Length: 240
Image 1 (cartoon, helix red, strand yellow):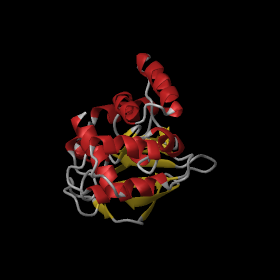
Image 2 (image 1 turned 120 degrees about the vertical axis):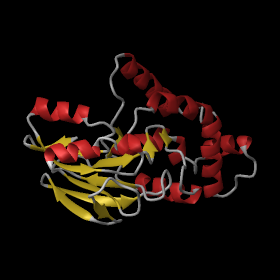
Image 3 (image 1 turned 180 degrees about the horizontal axis):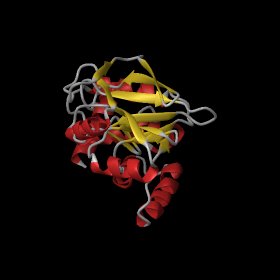
Image 4 (image 1 turned 30 degrees about the vertical axis):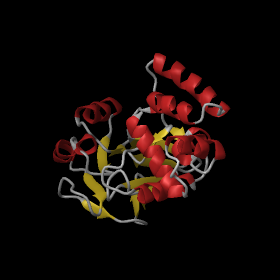
């Protein structure tokens, strides 16, 4: 949720009850609902929230969505809560997945990336191709390092176990795993992450690094070009 003290927007409300609770506790009116892709754990709360609040709903151009909805394509720009939000096409997890990017005045940018990028991981390829996901992640990796990564699931701890298997000698990864362990022991979130951190510890953003490539080729010796290296890494994670 983002809010300005009066109005709010929510991203990917898989449940309505937690949003209603937050709106009530903070005394906010829901202005908009932003959806990144069609999976139910990102959309199941949309209908109840729209009916109760009249909030406008925005979502991908080419995915099944709870109607009525304003459809968005790559490069679209919206003005909500006094913020400029830009839409990025990031297919791979689903065929029409989008992300939202904004930069509040005087703050680091904020990326709402759904299930495309996780901390220390990325989404499964349910509908898109390895090339699409590789290009989508490369696009996100090109954002400023300070960009806050607001992904949709707290998968960090489990992602780090796999990341360590891929790149056991990465000191940044070792340090981050200790930090994440401490946070999760206290039931605190690890998110948002940042693009700079993910470039240092996330194997799916490090498929150009020699140590990562060597590790992947031990899993699949036929992985030679960047896309096939990424595809092998994703397959390895699926089986891990």
